[in-house]
Length: 446
Image (cartoon, rainbow, N blue to C red; front, side):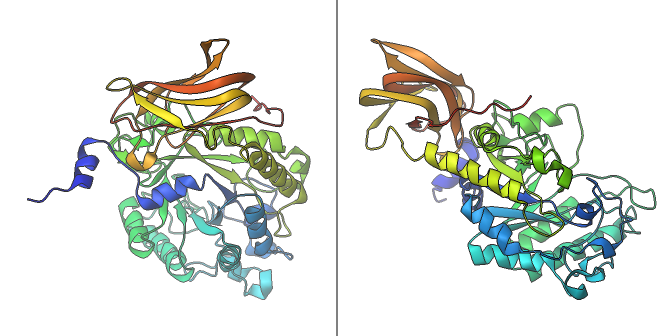
């Protein structure tokens, strides 16, 4: 029998991410694009009775979407190729309820094609959302017949549009036009993605690669573990008394790696409505959501819906640019750069990372990280600054994971340290950075 160190770590030191999962989280943010016939009905959810003839975004420019993502620091975008209304943004062979039956591009249009081509032209990673709930399909609720149709739709998307970065699955399951509900074949669905897009991240309530955070308010919990007990949510759409807690917090002793993704819309709702053009979240609020998602060991998925022309509205683009400017300015000057951060194990489950600035510095943002390529372990921490000959607590929290971002009251210190008070597995050295935020901290609306 040969020694396999990686197998030992997997079995006895907790789960670790795959290369794809690690790259996915390091991207930190992505754009979500809700777009379809619902864009033209001024509703939020379509009911499947919409006629394809209303879909005609005459000025659609997917390169504008991709250029905006690139310009504002979003490495990836996810498009709703099919939402609950069943309208397909590609010329599928499975239904007439698609872009092929619309006047868009003279009936020859393919929004998914334009989307993925634009992403690749601008160096953006393309992902797709394809709803299993289909309020238009006459066979929805007929078991294998509908599952075969859905698999056929997915097969088209997974084989005709090149490499995809992420497949986003919604567990929603209401009634179809016949009043019936459908039992989805999730094992078959996930197996198909693994076969046809082996490098894609599969997202859903139940992962298996990344999970929903349990709400659409951009609000993950603390603690937030990337580790999960897979039996807690066996399939997307599963309901139970402990489901939301599992989604929001994960499990300290979970056996699989399943990091959370935090979704929020730049507008009050998810599809574009002209009446909301003055209600776009301002840059400072978007930065606060960045702290609340990425800074709580999650990934930010920010919905920016194209308008009826097929473009991002000016108000949305302005907010994205402002967000990117603030984030870029904030993290451009790491106060610990060039300095040694000393890591000391102080016990079986405790340790300290400390940096001596050699002078008095002013800071108000502390950035603490675990090397999650080796797993997640820290279960309690506090940050302290050296002031007037004593350590003063500046912030504290539970989990760290990929990144814990703490905004603190602007303070002057000559040394900074993070104390790990508890951990669940082997505790690896903690990374520590500090910044001085040049702009006022925005508060999230409550």
